[in-house]
Image (cartoon, rainbow, N blue to C red; front, top):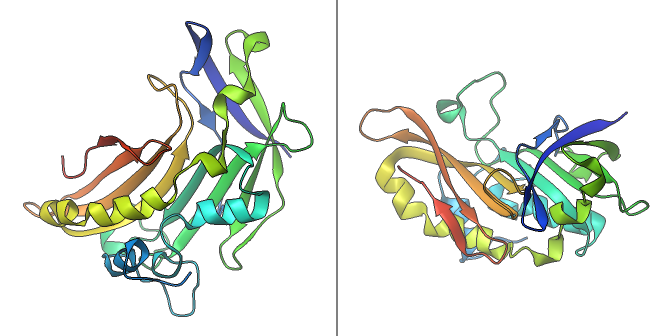
Length: 238
């Protein structure tokens, strides 16, 4: 079975950018708390998972999918993208089918360079009930544009190059801003996004769901971090 990733390429100087990546993600892809970033994350709304679960923001921090991928693949494994989603509670769910307890990991998946064939990608998702990754699947790459000029290396970064501690710090740093904008809020997604339209680099995106204080409208906002942890954008509460 193949998962397909499609790249639309445009030429910019001597390199290529992904103009519109489309990926079929795996379904259900997939520490001690301290007084610093992880401790504060445990106290944020939507941080406590169901009793007995170890896959929660409170226990593992918002970078838990990055840590799990590094443990499974090795810190220097090159990845294209990574995605983690968390329960936010029924009041913050836009479409409620089965509500996941606030702060509990809903999914974790990673797309990475095939160690046996560096021209290829593989993808694996986590069984969140066990915390173990399922068997990986090959990813078929399609290119819109000059396929012969495509280089997978342009869309890969080593896990070790990502400042994951900045993810914890960013969640803590945004609490006042989130509290000013929303009556209730929770971290919903943490992703490593590959290069796309207008962006020639990977970024780490943090997404929050919230209820606007003034009108109780359900809203989504977030911020992006560069791999070194510096802020790329911030639209929380805007």
